[in-house]
Length: 281
Image (tube, rainbow, N blue to C red; front, top):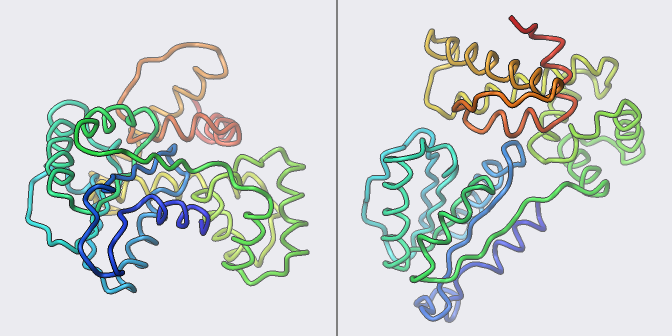
């Protein structure tokens, strides 16, 4: 995560004398591109916290909750983070947000957009005649990064962490620790279970359900509400069908799933868990 922050910092606007006026000739927009579960939202929140510590005016917008793309005035020292462009429904809402992004760039507002890779081109085309676009990707975590992350979050010794990571790899569940979003949920599971993993089924269940809950909470629905439960059940139905389609080599019908299918059905451990936990009807 620190390396990503460094790359993002190097990609941002240069300023004269620290707090002087922005160097317009070097203005650019940064797009953070990664699949669902890679830690885009976590990174957005870290960037917002850092900007606040630097006494900048920062606005973090979760686009799943604010889909209208309405314009509002921003100050010269404003730092805007638009998290989840990919969560917008194709059509009107995406076009509306692209118009807002274009307006922000023309006004030289300092901002970052997070999205899944398949939406990179739309953002580039929107800005190609206005300013350069820096695309920062979130790659798989190295073993060293995994150890550092778990050490910082759990306070465990690095020797203990290495044993746990080796156990996860022996179970062929390494896809649960390759992305920071998943790894954070693994860390939470370890915290709740006395820093031990005795049941990989329960670990998969925890990471899967936390991922579902995280995505659905960001839609603005209240956990426990009827609408939330219905949405959860619908997404489970979609993912179960797609998991079975994956195993059987079938091409199923694409349905709107907030990016969950791209993420969960690209992780072998989740495919297996979905097929076992949720029987196809």
